[in-house]
Image (cartoon, rainbow over all chains, first blue to last red; front, side, top):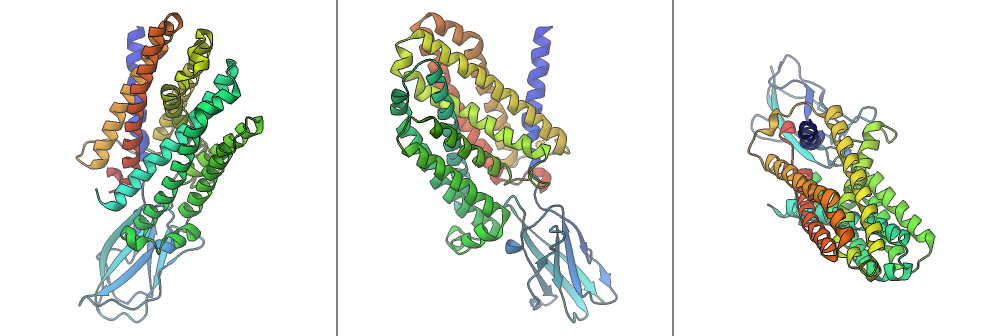
Amino acid sequence: MKTLQKIVAACVFTAATIAAPFVMAHAKLSTSNPTPGAVLETAPAEITLTFNEKVEQAFSTVTLTYTDGKVIATDKAKVDVGNPKIVRLQTKGLSTGTYTVKWAVAGNDGHRRTGTFSFSVK
Amino acid sequence: MDSVLGLQVGSAIFLNVAFAWLVGSWLARRWMSAVGASKTDTEHLLGSADIFAGALGVLAGCAGLWASAAVMGGVSLAEAKDLVWQMLTMTSIGRAGYISLGALALALAIRAYRSTAAWREWAVLAALGVFAFVRASMGHAGENGYWTIPFAAEVVHLTAMGAWTGLVFVSAWKAMGADALQDDSNRMGGYLEAMSVAATVAVIAIFATGLFNSWHRVGTVDNLLGGTLYTTALLVKVALVAVALLLGGYNKFFGLALARNSAQGIARVKFALKVESIVLLAVLFAAAVLTAQQPPAAM
């Protein structure tokens, strides 16, 4: 019986040790507006990216590229002061075409994540 | 392994070793004092190694901040020089980084100040406590505030890991060789008993906080089956922890009994501790690789 208890204890310990490192989740894009692949009737005035955790303003960038590869001039993307999980990029006068949003953020843990998605304006 | 990852992993290992050594040395000083060893002799035995550990920790902390700036900016180490100040002043991890570095520098300064006054031990303990507290806030545990159970669990986890690793390091390579213990089997027995109790408490704390973390924040372990560096490091770490536990268990249940009766028994305990310290060093290496990697669940 004591041997069985020791085996169970060892299994529980091993499981805990294995599982514990998974606590280190990193910043992931949860939602965005526009959504990836969206086809919009009117051009958006703002692109909003919502992450699963707080991100750092100093190391967060969002760039917008037109179909022809030209980077659209915008102000620097800003992390929402009230909710640091949200990054906003103001956009003005987007014409018809397909745009690629390229983002890079660093979470509070110091890890950097990057990603891209596209949307179109009719 | 690229230069950024290399510096990140290397600095994390040395920083953890330095912290562990200073915690282990603090404990060893108490136990040696409790069994009647002279404070002057203990200072002579541990002083230089403590200063070396403190200096190593400060250097590793600086290197770690440099690597962090490179990781956060997605740039090379050379380019990251321009980002370090921005990272230190404008990000949570930067602020936590320089506060923890300050705490370690304070511990180094106090250890460099040759004195056997009681206040010195409490000041070092406070500095190490601040270090553990701030380091715990550099992950996700402190995201919802400092006065939360997940954050408290992280502080305990870091401190217990430091205590377990440190007491093994210091006992194996310094304290057990002290004349004050070698010449008196009662003193040696008292020291080993105190060390064994502390190691058991530390391992239980590591187990309890690990279990809490898994219950609190783990979604699935399906991602464990994969071929990433993260997965490999994780499995290696688990295997090494198991080996270290076996060695610690041998000493607790067999080694200490033998050490009470013979010099040969003491030599066996010391040898087992030396092997355990090397295994724990490898655990710290695997843990540093894990910290620098993206877990499969986040990819």
